Length: 390
Image (cartoon, rainbow, N blue to C red; front, side, top):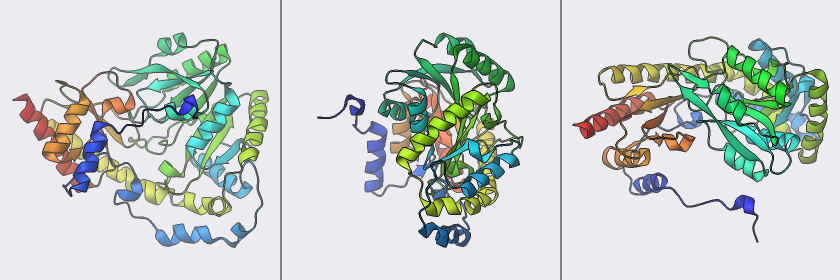
């Protein structure tokens, strides 16, 4: 009765079951995985945000497959603010980056075609690709005084069915960014094999040293697609607006845009109130994003201060984003460690295998966790690991 593409293992994992049970029993939980800014004690300008949704123009249905021009122009102003000149004709609005991936898989791939994806990285990609009958092929990020793409492994992973290379810039959860040298190598590989680049840039505004990250929206060497949206850059995941910016050689770019317009016209999923509100919602970016960055910096300082008082654990280098990866002693599975932390100390963290780390000894923490929760939860975590080692 059902398609093979939905034959997933829907059983709840042990950690999720333990969390549900603890909450059901009313046990205290120090959640160091909270990545939803609307639940992380961030202050929002409710009047400005909600009033933007009552524009009377939203009562008129004037569909545009690419999205309303005024909304796309607001996206262009965002890119101008980070040093990239983008024409509104190159912007296509979607309801989420997940939908944007759906459009791009449909644009680039036939059933059974392949897209290269980094590991470790965000686990949702497998589901999105599977629903479009696309096969994901991993290429490794390696850690040596910072994260790097294994360029040789990436190139060796290419087959006649490869259609694109995906990069997550900055990466979730490694916090690494694509260097200029890596971008040059990536463009060489994609040009040589007639591949497109798909760049997930939702964390682009959260570079921790204050520098400006280079967006693939300005990558004209090869056909490139830059994805972003309100969820991260404005801390508004409930306001479902995202976009694709297409870049690259003119002939390829225009052909891609023509096809994307037909795909978008088939769905017409964007709603008018959010499109009219987008300019005002993007204006909230500095207020909300500034609070998030301040939280990340504060929790990073707390993390480093507590780590300096012990020798068993250390954090991996982070360039951007709002996650930290802890390297911890591995005497069993990360899932077992997370379960013990939850049951014995009431602390919730994510095991590295959630993000396709291929060996144990890695925990993932959210740096936008409220400060008091982060401080106490981290203290309990490090104390617990110390006691296990004695």
